[in-house]
Length: 167
Image (cartoon, rainbow, N blue to C red; front, side, top):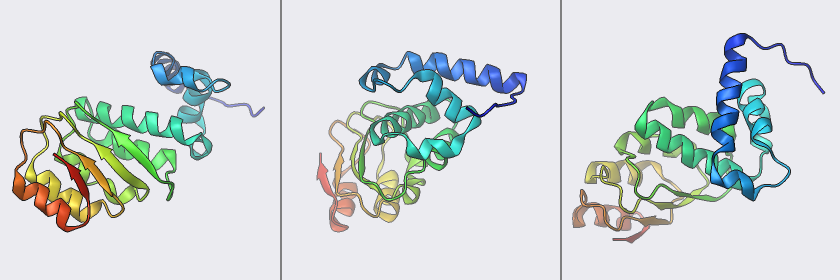
């Protein structure tokens, strides 16, 4: 096993991440992969993150997007870069979150995103749907039920580029 020479701030970051990840309900779905291992990869070995199972990467991205909406808009971009998505197909469920139009600008960095659930998200607007239409190249399905900030015009824009929309 490789010895890691960590600074005090890295050790503190690692410990906080380990505590946060251990509290996430999805970690129990992956026996053999511990919160400590994920925290270590995030803190010390970001290249190893690309080899995590797809389900864990998806859960981590969901969490990162939600944290971006609440705290730091750069958090999701950092997670996308560090998790090594490549072209693997996946879906993302952000229903009920406070995600906003700013997040949609990272879609070009998620070529495998095919299904997105934004149902019940209060900050979704037609302007955001314009960004989705321009940057979500492989998106095939978008759930926008209970999103009060969009109109028929926004839905039509998505359907015109071939995205199936639930509204």
